[in-house]
Amino acid sequence: MSCRMDRLLFLILAQLLTTATCGTDPDSESEESDEGDMPDHWTYKDQDWSKGYKLCKENSQSPINIDTSKTTFNNKLPLIIPEGYNIPETEQLELSNNGHTVKLSLPDSMSISHGFTQKYLANQLHFHWGSATSSGSEHTVDGVQYAAEMHVVHFAAKYGNLIEAAQKADGLAVLGVLFQVGAQDNKNYNPIFDKLQDIAAEDANVYIPGFDISTLLPDQLYRYFRYDGSLTTPPCFQTVTWTVFNETVQISQAQLDKLETSLKAAHGTLDSNFRHVQPLNRRTVFASFSPLPTSRRIVPNIDSNAPSEATKSVDDDFTLGDMLAALFGILFGCTALAFVIYVIRQRKRQRSSTERGQKVIYKPAATMEA
Ligand SMILES: *[C@@H]1O[C@H](CO)[C@@H](O)[C@H](O)[C@H]1NC(C)=O
Ligand SMILES: [Zn+2]
Image (spheres, protein in one colour):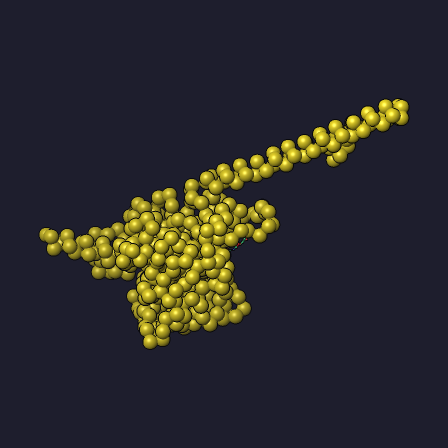
C-alpha cells in the first residue's frame, strides 16, 4: 500500500525530472505509461495539452510571439555571462533521443548569474525544429518563425536540483537561441549534429567528449528579450525566466536538414517538434537593448500563422499614453509658440502702422495652416 504510494511518488518525480525541461518528455518513460496512471501521451500534432495538464492553458505560457514594437527597454538587463561552459574533453556528455527532441545533458559546473537575480546551474540543452516544408522555432519575433531553436535549461542553484526548482516561481532560467540558414556549416555544432545519425532510434543515446558550449551561443550576449513564461512541453510549469537572444545563429541548410530528418520517434520521423505561440496576456516583454531609432514601423505580419494575440497589455497602455502625451505636448508647444509670434508681429504692425500711417495689409499667419 504505502509501497505503491512511494512508487507513484517516484514516478511523478521521475516524470518531472524528464519533463521539467521544456523539451523533454514523459512519454519516453515507457515503463511509466505501462502503469496507466499518467495522462502523458501528449504530441505536437494535437497541442490541446490542457486536457491532461491543466497548467498548459494558464496565462503565462511559452512560447510567445515577441512584438518588438511593444517591448520595454530595461537598462538593468546586462550582458549574459556563461560561466564554466568550456567543458573539458575528458568529460563525457550524454546525447539522447527522448522521442520529443535531441537532448545534450550538461554538468552543473556550468552556470549563469550575470543578467539574473540569482545563480542558475545548467542541466541540459535541446532543440526544436520544423520540417522540409516549414520552420520550427518556438518563439517568433514580429510574427516571423525562425528555422529552429535551441534551449539551454538551467535551474536555480538554491533549490539544489531541477525537479525541486521546476515548480518554484523563480526556479528555471532558459536561454533561447534562434537559428537562421546561412551559407556555411557552423562547425561549432558538429559535435552534436555529427552524432544525430547514431541516435536515430527513440531512447538511443551516445556520449560525446566535452567541448565549449558557449560557442553554440550568438556573439552578442547583451542583446536579448526577457519575459516570464513556462516550459513549452507538459506539464507547462510557469516557472521559467526566459532569455531569447536577439542575434540569431547561422547553420547551413545541410545541418538543418540533418536536424529535421535524422531522428525517429514512435510515429516516424521526429520533426515539427515546436509548440505554437501562446497568448501574451498581461505580461511585459523586456528588451536589454534600446531599439534602433527607426521609430515605430508598421510591419505587416509576414507569417499568417503568426498570432496577433499581443493584445492589451499594461505595456500597451503605457506606450499609448506616452505617445498621446508627446503628441499633446508638441501641439501645445506649437500653439504657444505661434501665439507668441503672432502677438509680437501684431505689436510690430501696430507700432509700424502708427508710425507710418495706414500701409499695413493684414494677413493671417499663413504658417499656422501650412
Ligand atoms: C532583433 O531586434 C530588432 C530590433 O528590435 C528586430 O527588428 C529584429 O527582428 C530582432 N530579431 C530577432 C531574431 O530577435
Ligand atoms: Zn525547449
